[in-house]
Length: 201
Image (tube, rainbow, N blue to C red; front, side, top):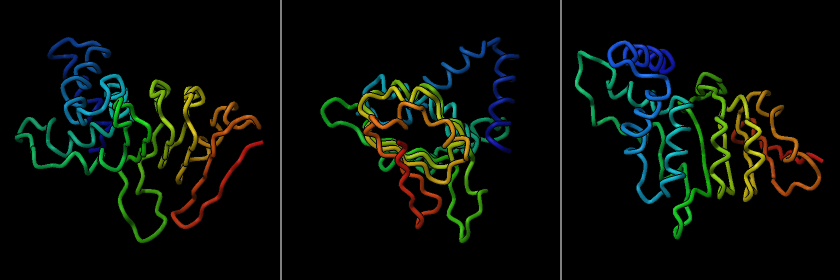
């Protein structure tokens, strides 16, 4: 069952059994499920932002669903590695002194294939909360279909890689990143071997 469906059903079940509001459910999932999965060396504020991103892109629910978190007839499978869904060792880098996230590599449900089948991705919308990771220098987005304007407010951003993203992602790159005064390098990678550098003037 797709994570989106699982999320919806689990939310509805919680609302019925515990009378949780949408926001209460979100906070519960972020605090009790997402936060404990992330490295403690990440600054608390950035860890909470990252947990929200995992929630909004369904990465968290893909993992919990695979681990049978929502299956009343099965025991939670702690042997399912979260790194299969989000590998903190390769997907983020932090400043060793402050713990702030400086690099984010975001990919949802990627699987190796022999061809160029788009089904290897679950296309997602990058949530606006990304704008709170104000020490980000580099972002790599795989299969993104929409980029929020908040990404243009990141003060330290130097590089944005868009890998096999939808056209909607290219169309929603904030204007301030496209103009001639921007120092952000934007790369559009259609395949792993075909790299086109896009510099908007």
